[in-house]
Amino acid sequence: MAQSRSKAGSATAGAAGKSRAKTASGSTRSKKSSAPPKDLLEYYRQMLMIRRFEERAGQLYGMGLIGGFCHLYIGQEAVVVGLQAAITEADSVITGYRDHGHMLACGMDPKGVMAELTGRSGGYSKGKGGSMHMFSREKNFYGGHGIVGAWVPLGTGLAFAEKYNGTKNVVLTYFGDGTANQGQVYESYNMAELWSLPVVFVIENNNYAMGTSVARSSAQTELFRRGESFTIPGEQVDGMDVLAVKEAGDRAVKHCRAGNGPMLLEMVTYRYRGHSMSDPAKYRSREEVKKIREERDPIDHARNLILKAKFADEDALKEIDREVREIVANAASFAQESPEPDAAELYTDILIGS
Image 1 (tube, one colour):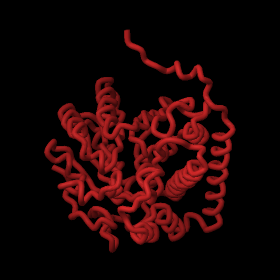
Image 2 (cartoon, one colour; image 1 turned 180 degrees about the horizontal axis):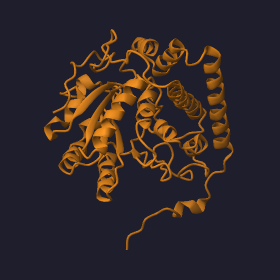
Image 3 (cartoon, rainbow, N blue to C red; image 1 turned 45 degrees about the vertical axis):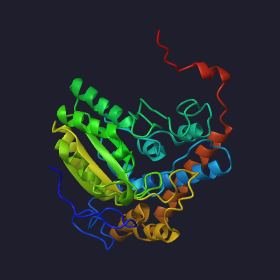
Image 4 (cartoon, rainbow, N blue to C red; image 1 turned 60 degrees about the vertical axis):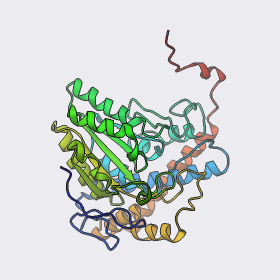
């Protein structure tokens, strides 16, 4: 059975879990830093990289240099950084369309990611995939998928391949609270448990899916319980605390790598922007977003831990920010200067059946 957790919290604070300590909002926090200095500093740097990258992507979208849909990851950075730290380079990752943060956390080049956003030949999909369709076989990142929930069976299939080939590798399959209601997700749960597949199902619960709160769209708001009928263990985690995420990721990966079948992690997180760049997010108040930013921001939380533990001082953190901004600026320049794909690329990378 799933591990027991406390009842869901308010729409503002999100569903609340139970851990070693609680904040007033009901979300879990680690009591103190349990990571070595270099690890916590690296988590901070990676989260800051995603934040600055997404901020620049939003600017380029506003300038008309990025077209189509663009779903930013601002606010959710601790989830992917913490979980990526729990796996190895041999493990695989698959996700939906809010995917830029996952790519960067997997080690994909910011230049290639930004160039793909602008539809240039220097992008990971040669400028033909855009925001929602990027892949890197080298980094074991399998997308980036635009159809809601369609990648969850694919992630389960990746885990089947790992078990079939006799490896000890694990697959992280990410999806959101809206996708959690899709039928194919439950089919994937059933198959994964039936065949004891090494897959961690990660629900990034940012409260609002495409614009409807979990409280209005889900009869069971404790999403970590969704695997109970399949006997899949689940855990609810404060997705705004990178150390809590890392610790939960370690437990889940260990469970799967030992041959115990799948595990479900509900990451209680929050996105600061709308569902996509075209979403004005009028279904929530500015005061709510401001409150989360001020009280639960994942980067500020890591920064405070670093300063309190004296892992680094203010000047060192400012230098990290300067370095990150320079990398992102170079990525943006590369994306704008890279040529557009040749028209002949329309006929490449196409699978034709006889």
